[in-house]
Length: 66
Image (cartoon, rainbow, N blue to C red; front, side, top):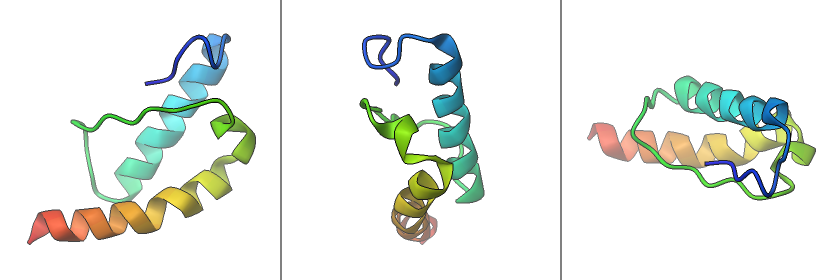
């Protein structure tokens, strides 16, 4: 969920949603998860966001498959 208060432009909100979907897809997780995004997320850049999310999601995905 990306608040309009944090990112007023739809272009930015949609970009964040695409990034999150791509990161979850890369980890093998699909739908059914809620991610709350705060101001500053977009400023990190995709690579930094991916590097922060990926280890946690890989660990989560491996526990879920067992």
